[in-house]
Length: 469
Image (tube, rainbow, N blue to C red; front, side, top):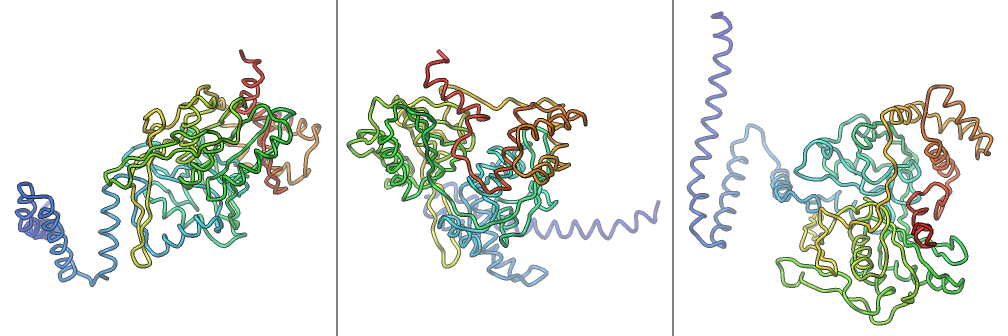
């Protein structure tokens, strides 16, 4: 008993002494902070900066190990942005600024998905979240979806990682592989191996679904998106289209100017979006140009989901608020804020400067745009989740496609029967879609639309034909 007391005491007193030393330093600085409450904001800011300088110099002179001043400053800058509790505002070091430049240039090395990490929420949002996979990339071909959470990268949990940390792990030499663990829904967890590639961000794809229905997929908004959309519309006009489906699913957004230019093709002037912020220059109304390319009698349906974000939400909200289109799908992501990127030497930061407001005066930040007609992929039962997990873990679909190449109908039917015999009971449409995704991945083939398995697109076709009324 006494032996235990004697061994514990030096540690206890050492801890108390250290605590008192820290407390005395803190108390010495408190009056300067308290005094701020009764003075003007400019003077209070000066005192706060003075407080920062005192603490910075105290650490430099007294910390047990020598500290690189740049490390202290970067840590303080990161902490300042993190205190905003805004996932879109952050300090960016030299490497992160370079990575941002790579991304916005439209070509970079990685797996091809936009990710985010909601701040200040517990539980299901602790992990990095997939905002949207980029079309025709490894992540897209692997069947990753908006809303999937990346639980781990190479076995390392992402719960304590920042978005930039995960981006660094996902990027790498093209041709190398990275193993991630995906959490879908509440508890469907499965491994995915992605082969890194040079990512080239596409913008627009289009085709005619039938003699009168045009399909336009806008993948991202860039300075050139409106030119590509204009080219698509000319093609539709030449083919005598009467209705148009605009697919904005998994569109992460892009440039504000790009989406306003695209909106001008559908409106004869009038408001597209408004931005409001504390700085006067951020308070602006963005209007469509006079004259429209798409005739008013062309019926329009817009497809949206949880991966439709930012500029994609601006276009969908404008078309909905101004009664120009019917929205079908799922509620959008809810990224209704405007960021600016500023450079500080080789480093920099991004900061939210304003929020978007739709023509109806609605701010969609953290809320999203609600579709007129909600269509969701049916949720898997617990038994189906177990079946899906087994298929992924055992690489059943991958092995099947590796063995037969592009399968015939009889090959697929035999594969489904084999799964059933092994006790894997999953909806047949779901299995067939998994096979389609894997075949497209292996053959490096991209489909503009999938009328056979895409429930949202099927609903849009029913709406335009009037068969649902």
